[in-house]
Image 1: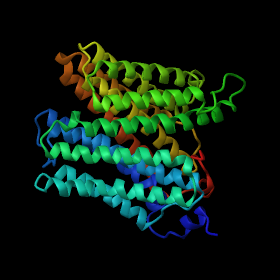
Image 2 (image 1 turned 30 degrees about the vertical axis):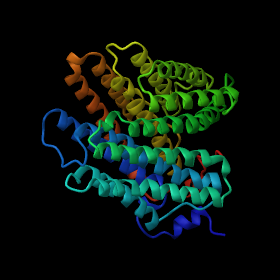
Image 3 (image 1 turned 45 degrees about the horizontal axis):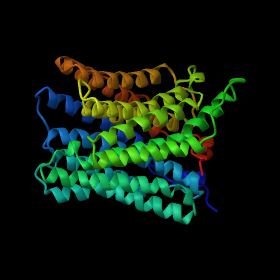
Image 4 (image 1 turned 60 degrees about the vertical axis):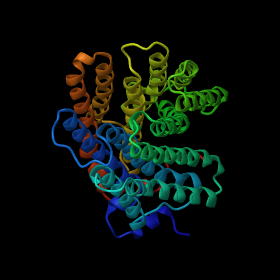
Length: 409
């Protein structure tokens, strides 16, 4: 029977197409940096692109449905073969999926003269194809436990489709149902997948450090309760984003996930950035829920849009950056430790999130604070592309070909 390592060795094309994380993580980072440069230029009144959406909607779509879709593709195309025991997608089929994603970015960014339906079809082609591939692998591998991941991906796709519809109708797509559905699906992905990998990776590292508190095993009763509360809060937020009960549910979800995070022994991980960044990234999920609750229940300086960035830039941004750095190191045969340059990348993104939140709290300083936020974002993702791009483009080490960083069946 052909093994993953044999299949990869048989490929004679670019090393970039030997595993799903390679093209999609690199493409995601380059896109995130490029899209922020475009957005900062728009804010400064500079020349723009012939966007398919109005500028604010494009900005929201670029990072949620553009950037995150690439990271999700890279993660799932790498993780699912380990979950199911089946072979990964390698070579030109992988290149075709990546080409579909790239076509979506071009259509949304340069398709101002195209029919809205054409832009939507081009943009949705990759995530729909990805969902079909993942469904085939889960069914063929009888890996029923991870049907929940497929369901979250399907919800994310529905959110993207609705975003296109709202934008075509001239609505405020950046604050519409489609964005909330997509962002809600992203928060559920982080809570479910993060709830598996963070305690597992933390335990693996801590047992080598000596005696002390270890994370509670994942998916205990409190974990399931926290997930149910978050799901209820997100459903309420999608349907009635400004309602008092929605604010109360978001506050409850935030508190539940703070308690959940506290059970994973994150306070013991300070000496290894590759581990503590996972805890820091997850922390933005409850902090974002609490900030949204505050903006709904006590309207004031903190707007819903500013609070939402704790999820959009904080939870999504830092968690994906944490996963991308760890997966790239592990699957290319590098030591699982973050060097000083990687720490700078992490801190640049945290700075970007803090500056964007501060811009919402102090509108008089919004201009310079948004510039700081944009600079931090570009440093983070441009830094990832520069630091990890060579590893992503290089032929993998033999021992990494069999290394299963995502064995959570």
